[in-house]
Amino acid sequence: MTARQGLTMAGLEKAAAFYLERYASSRENLRRVLMRRVAKAARDDDTMAEEGRALVEALLARYVAAGLLDDARYAERKAESLARAGASRFQVRGKLMQKGVARDEIDRAVRALDESGAESEMRAAGSLIRRKRLGPYRKSGERAAHRQKDLAALARAGFALDLARRLLGAPDVAALENMVRKED
Image (cartoon, rainbow, N blue to C red; front, side):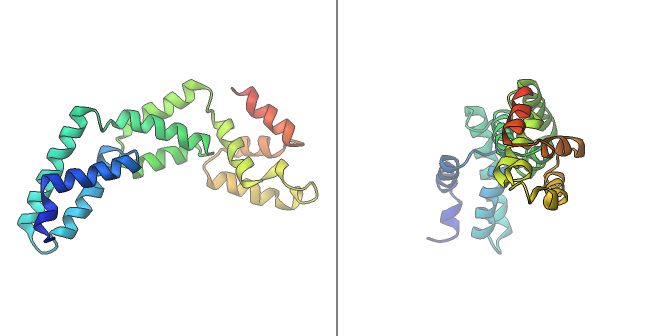
């Protein structure tokens, strides 16, 4: 296969469909994926690169019009998924920015998280504590020795210090789970 064969609309559609079958994507993220393919095919040919860019833009416009790419829906679902996994609102914003989602879409997705109540910041922090086995999940003799490290882990994840202190101060796992459930 020559480089020019890889820059047909059919070839780009096949690559886009293959990517979208495996991953949810924002418009900008799919643009980046396809433009890497264009760049590889048109290494030293500026004309071919421009043709490829035009093909990618036309393909993206068609996918948006058909509803295959919807940044608002993508941002909302990705934000929910990240929060369930223990990501702070700060991390959610960062991950969505990395995927090329517009700031207003990110703001809407975070507001939707806050309004849903089911995935509050406290619940996300509780998920991270559970996953990393911090605070009440540590053996009782190790908790005091690792308190600063646990606080630092939550701070690096973007959680507020007062929230981290409150959750890590839970006397046991049951108390922590009760604190997290009360927020729902």
